[in-house]
Length: 276
Image (cartoon, one colour):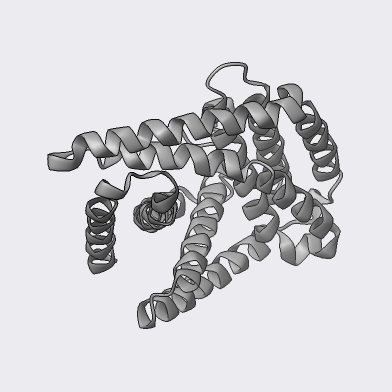
């Protein structure tokens, strides 16, 4: 799936005059992507995924510019977080379907496919209930419009490249600290914190690369770092999906298959932990 961060071709041709103005252009593009995701009439689960990715990117940019924007951006960040959470059950249900299908191989292939079918039914039921309460996501679209307006009103022109670079350094330190703690004791909470910090840093490094306020050699280094961080977020994200699926097994799987499927999940998680 394509990144929610707009490519160079989708950005305005006239270069913004400062790092802050470049970020403002990026934020506006991310808001458009979120609006497009909520407005989708078909493949709405993909639309929900795109919205949540765009929101994560927006929150990452706000954190990147926190040194300058300060507490003025805090209410906007909370509103973005609440909007994303209002879609989390839909996204989690869809991820369960995809994860179960990805495990459909070997002797238990049909058992995984049957499980995926049950998850798919639950997924569509949740979507139907959500749309019954919020037809066409109209309420959420209105919330997003208000958030977009508030984002545009922030003093982006005050944001300087130096403060953004400082934020990236701090982000690297937070990731390293979270990694040390997670590897010392692999609790769900520590792994989740590690994954979130790696993902946010990846989005921030990618934002810096895309607004093109650094030299070409530095942007190339940033692109390489994005690739490294993406591999780590993919691994940690896969582990999270497997953990969630393991928690859901008792609710939807047949008793005769449950132990076999649980052992497969435990094996997959152990292999990921060994490569972390």
